[in-house]
Length: 297
Image (cartoon, rainbow, N blue to C red):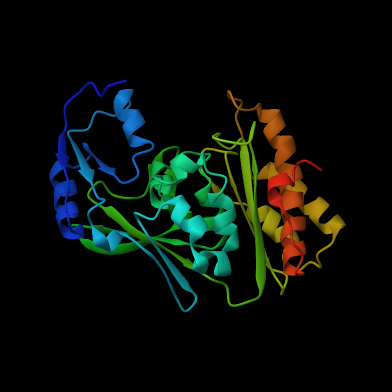
């Protein structure tokens, strides 16, 4: 299907130049990185921008860097780069786990983590992991640079707190000082290129602190504070996890759509929360857990 309308194509080589372009076109502009969403939307006339800003020639937006306990992921970093990053495998293996569930190899070779969170679709796989790590999204606009908590980033389906003239330059993820383990469990209709019916990420530390986040179970991806409160400071056990997982029902508001019914999502959210907790606990104890098959047993 061809793109049926005209737009101005611009390819800046610096963040400053890109921000200047964004401020000139205001709301009627789109950034192009991986393009896995944008090109489809252009072809289907979902969006009709006056300009498309190709940011792939901006060196500052590339690269993965670990400095101390801080991980920096540039706006051009693809899911495939995350999967193959030795630093991320070592310090944030659950981020690799989530990246491996995104679409297909071909899509992961182009799609970026930043593009995923900028799409802000309810089912985005990157969000739950970023939420349990309290990530920061760094943006640059005509008024300078600012850092936005991932908890404030999603304002509605396909909506973020980024201003029209702002460009995301990178995401920062901080590694907890305590020993911890995490897991991301995704429910799909089949293995392969499918959006999540539900997604649950869990982190727990050896001092009994828990973080839980979900996607595809409401209008935005978000943390589950009621589940966390039911778990924090409690000794991990099967009974503790079973009791706490039920609180997820008061945290979510799933819908019925082509991928799943509301009732099925509610039922599976409880199952997934419990099993993600069990997987993270097993990992904290040094055991190997294959989450790709965690919903099969």
